Image 1 (cartoon, rainbow, N blue to C red):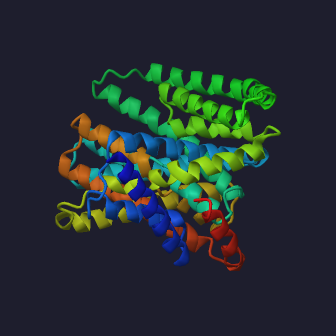
Image 2: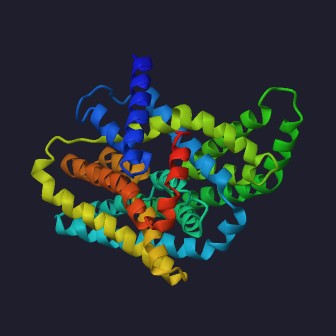
Image 3: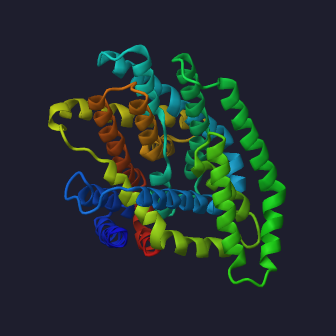
Length: 391
């Protein structure tokens, strides 16, 4: 059963992605929609299960690992200021907007805070793929988005710990902060000294594809170490990619990892996002979903966009950065699931939140395409199609 489900996912991903590209959109948009169609929400050809969830997790880890491999570390450092402004702008405004939306809906104080936190979370995996297909991931806007996503993850998790501790949960803020410090301290040390030495050692081994296999092992270990310390696993994978990308074998490893990732794992991740769609009772909350979706999109675009503007970006670049921060993706889904697990938010509101998260995820690829759609980009569409062929 699992085998035929994987076959359906991969076939659908390729067909839907191809159609999306022919319609002038990033392939990831087609894959997201395909997931909704073949998932439980519509036709029910494939239902989510633990195996597919694990494959999906590997997909987003490899995707962010590739993003790290492609990151220009000099460009990344030059955009630290912008990333900081974008990150905080993309946290403050959505958190305030989400909180007051909860208040207006009659939710309690902690419910409204949690409501805001779900809408504050940022998942740039969708933006990363869209920008890669357009050849824009290595731009200053792309680097600002990636840096802001790292900051966003840290701040949102700390805020979550604060809220949970005040609610009486067994969460220690000092422990959470200590784990973050431990992770980043050890990660930086490993990135600086250990990983480059390890890759050089692997390059001298007689085992076939030793550097590529070693790179994937490092990626997985970093992802696990990050998750263990309360940081999203994609951040650990991204950091591992940055370090390996600075070595002499970085460009060769990228090519091999892309084959592994885009042949199997990454398409599964994008399609599986659609499996979380729940369309039952949507008509009853339609206007609420529309209103919250607009608020969620605009709060991120305006908040992160103003952050980019304060960092010295032009208005168009600021809008592009803001659009890249819109997708809430799997990070918000995890927070939403946590809210229902601890009975903080009722099931009806949980369904509304899930749909709003999916809307922000679906709107990100075409939004980026529109904002990057100038003469230069039109001339690069052939290159974009070439990139898609890897998918």
